[in-house]
Image 1: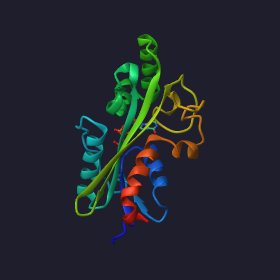
Image 2: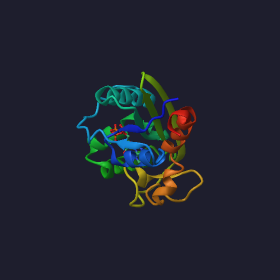
Image 3: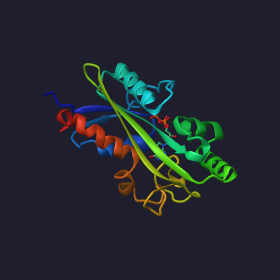
Image 4: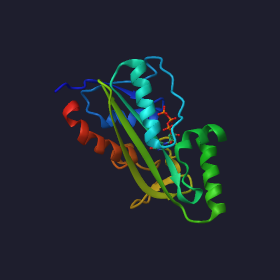
Length: 197
Ligand code: ITT
C-alpha cells in the first residue's frame, strides 16, 4: 500500500492551515498553496461538501500533490443558518470579522429567536489517481457576546454546548481537539489510515 508522505493543505486561511497541520501525523510534510503561488478557486458550490471537493480538485490539479481542503462556516439557526457557506464572504462584505460578528450579534438580538448555532467543516482529501473522500463534522453550540483573543474568524462569538467559554477563550489545544474540523478529520482518518499511518 502506498503511503502519503506529503500533503498540500488546500487553504489560504492561516487558522485552518494550522489546525489541519496539527491534526495530521507529524511525519507528513505539509505544503501551503502560498509556497507554490497558487491562488484560491471561486467557491461556486451550494454546500460545504461541494465547495470542499471543488477546492481539493482545484489545488490537486494545480500542484499534482495529494490535497486536503476544508470548507467551513458558522450556521446561526435564527438567521436561516446564515452566514453558513458565506461565512468568509460576510467578513469581506462587512469589512472584517469584527464587523461581521457585530452584524451577527445585532441580527440575533433583533430576530429574538434564540442563539442556537453550529460550526460545520467539510474536509476533502484528493488522493493520487483521482480518488476523493469528503467527510463533514459539526459542533453545536450558541452565539455569545464577543469574548476571548485566541483562535481566528468567528471564534469569539461561539460557545460549544457543554462549555462556558467561547472558542476564542479556550486554549488552542482544547479547541483543536473538539471542534468541527477535528470531528470531520476523525471520520476521514478512519478511511485514510492505511495511506497515512
Ligand atoms: P479557504 O477557502 O482558502 O480555505 P476561507 O477562509 O475562505 O479559506 P471558507 O470559505 O471555508 O474558508 O470560509 C470559512 C469561514 O468560516 C472563514 O471565514 C473562517 O474564518 C470561518 N471559520 C471556519 N472555521 C472556523 C473556526 O474553527 N473558527 C472560527 N471561524 C471559522
